[in-house]
Amino acid sequence: MTTMTSMTSDKPTLRTQEIIVFLADYGAWLLGCGATCIRLEKNVHRIANAFGLTVEIIITPRHIHLSTTGQDYSEPFTITAPTKVHATDFEIITQLSRLSWEVADKGPDFKRLKSEFHSITNNNRQNKWLVLFLVTLANASFCRLFGGDLTAMSLVAVATLAGYYLKQCLIEAKTDIRLTVLICSFVSSILGSTDYLFSLGSTPAITIGTSVLYLIPGIPYLNSFSDLLYRYYICSFSRFMDAIVMTACLSIGLCTGMMLMNIGMF
Image (cartoon, rainbow, N blue to C red):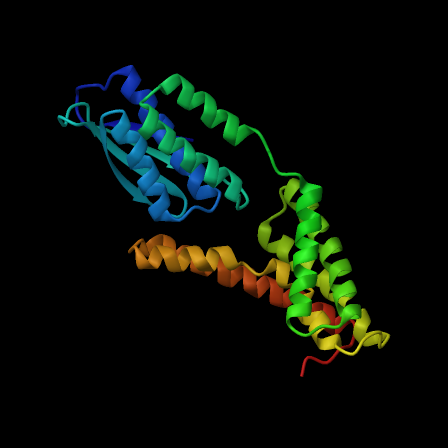
């Protein structure tokens, strides 16, 4: 729930309040969808400046704090908004960034801004079946890149298809992401182990190793490094630890599947 605090006895105008609430919600969506802190700060400043507001932002892993004033330092106001819980979505990040540039280039129109913002955040443009197909194709390609044969690529495609579809279902059911990664890696490793069990191809180790690559949290690692470069140390450390936990869950699921199928890890 968003909380707001006036910094002085002078209450800001209703319009200023609406803009500040919007900026907090806008930033919360960007952070929740996986945007880096520097992108979030630049976009929020861009919109605020278009409306004649000066904004100071404090970004934490779970909240965004905005302190704003008019350009003449009138109407001081502070707001805190919780980060939106959402899967990484580059489409939303791109559309929200484009929206900030539209405001800067075409001038402030708060009614249109809110309308486009709600359209971006409420409409799911992704076709989950297309995403499932592309992830499957990409992971099979990684298998080939690492030296897997045609059999290995086929088995990795099946393991990825089953695992990623299960991931989609678990996320829709609001299952904890850590448990989701563990379960999906377990299922994919079981399917990838068939290359070892039945001697179907000549690269069984590559089959198992690449069957869970689609679960590697590459984006949190990259975002953590970006935040570190721009001195957002708290968010950087938080994202890095999230990525470490996801990697540990992936490893547990993979090792458990291999142990269940009686496949030696060394």
